[in-house]
Structure formats: structure tokens, C-alpha cells
Image 1 (tube, rainbow over the protein chains, first blue to last red):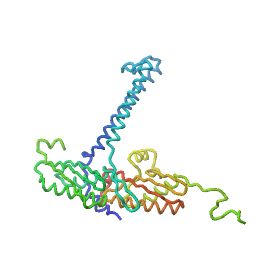
Image 2 (cartoon, rainbow over the protein chains, first blue to last red):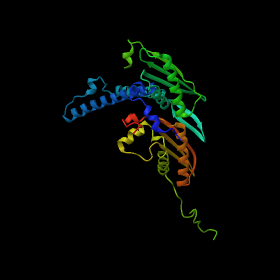
Image 3 (tube, rainbow over the protein chains, first blue to last red):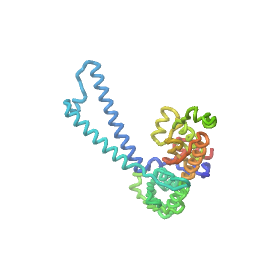
Image 4 (cartoon, rainbow over the protein chains, first blue to last red):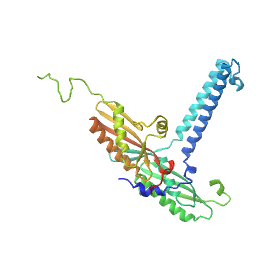
Length: 200
Length: 129
């Protein structure tokens, strides 16, 4: 039914893959970091306030932070926080991984583009000269378009990596969703020795 | 005689209601046995289940209307497996198991492959083991 795991998993590279996550992953991670930081800061301030109340102190971190004490000011602040939250949510939704639709048998199979991009990344990163891979899989109607940006070590053979990356991406797409006709657009950037530190 | 209860259907003796969670468990079990399926559920539900323990309905959403049922499944497929074939196998297994076990008519099984799993992600041994 499906490809044997014994022969395929051994080709997965063990390095670099995590350093080249998709843009959606990076955005989600940044968003999560911002939200968690805000939540942690709020928790600390609440703890300070509770401690002050418990020790019968009138100290309030809200005043120190310049948060208005009157009801109108606080409602205004709440509205601003709500608007910011909605903007963050909208930005998060815009950066969601797109879904690819494949008509199979009795229905449609949905595949997150990120899942296929991970598979392409794993295939191309098998070569030791490849430093970073940024695949992008999108669907236009029934056609699947694959773009792969490859960053290679200095002095690498660009033509060889071009062919290798095209084959790797094609193999990942064929293996993943059974589309052998997809022609990946690959761009290989052989970095200079000066720039290589950016990718290590 | 004409008003006698039908022992086959039990129509005059009451009704049988199958809850969503029962169907979800059957579907989850059917899908989990398919080769190439690493886990069910999206990233958030898997993170939650790691805290509260494995759920038998994770990644499965069920909507029963009368005697028909719509099932949504979210999968994580192992690297190397054909995602669409795994999804198809899952759909067939779910349809067969749910219809065979509950007697409900499966109208649709919507499968979403949300992620691909690499064994090295968890530091598991490679394929040669």
C-alpha cells in the first residue's frame, strides 16, 4: 500500500532540518513567543499585586506601569488590547499553512502544504553541500506548483545540486502524493565563504 | 398480531442511540491500524494529549444526522508513506469499521494530512534497527 519505511527513513538527514523551517512555522513560533511573554508578564504583575494585598500594602504594579485607575481609561485600554488581539489573530490566520486538495477515490484528501514541504526539505538536505532548503508548495486549480530555494556551501557544484534538488523534490512529491508530473522550480544559491556563517 | 413489537428492530421497545464518541473511537481505532499513520490529530490536540494522556478519539470529529454519519479525520503520516494512499486506506477502513460496527451509513469521511513524521524528531533509532 505504501512505501516501506525501512528503506525511506534511513535517508532522513539528522542535521540542519530544524534550522530551515517554513515561514508559517517561524511566524507561528514568533506569535506564540509574543503571546506567552505577554501572558507571563501579566502573571508576574498579578502575583505582585496579590502579594501586596496579602501583606496589606497599597502597592499596585498597574500604577507603576501607567495603567489608568479610572474606569473609562481601563475600558479604553481593554478595547485597545482587544483590537491588538484581533489583529494578531488575523495575522496568524493569514500565515496558516495552505491546504492542498487531491481528488482520490470517493472524496478529497487534504494535505497541509507544510507536510509536503517538510518531505522535500528532508530529501534535498541529504546532500552534505546543502546548507538550507526553503520549499514552497502551492496549488492553482488542479496544478501543484513547487518552488525550492537551496543554499549551498561555497565551492559547491551548482549544476549538480540543481539536478539533485529537482530530483529530490520530484521524488518527495511523487512519494508523498503520487504526482510524478510536477516540475519543481529550483534555485540554487552557492554562497560565498564570507556569507556562509549566516547558514551554519 | 399486527401491533406486535418487531423483535428484529425493536421499534416498539424503544430506540438505540449511538453517541458520537463511540463512532469516533471506532474510527480512531480503524485509522490507527493503517500502516503509514503515525498519529491522529493536529499539533494542538497532540500537545494536549501528551499532558492528559492518550485519547481514543483524538483527531476524529463525528457528526451523526439520523442514520448517517460524517467523519473528519486529521492524520500525521510517517515520512516515506504516500499520503494520499494512506488517507484513502484510512477512509476505507473507517467506512468499513463504522458501518460494520454501528450499522450507521457513513456519508463522508474527510481526511486531512496535517503533518509528516520523521523518526529522528524523537531521537528514535533509524530504519536499520
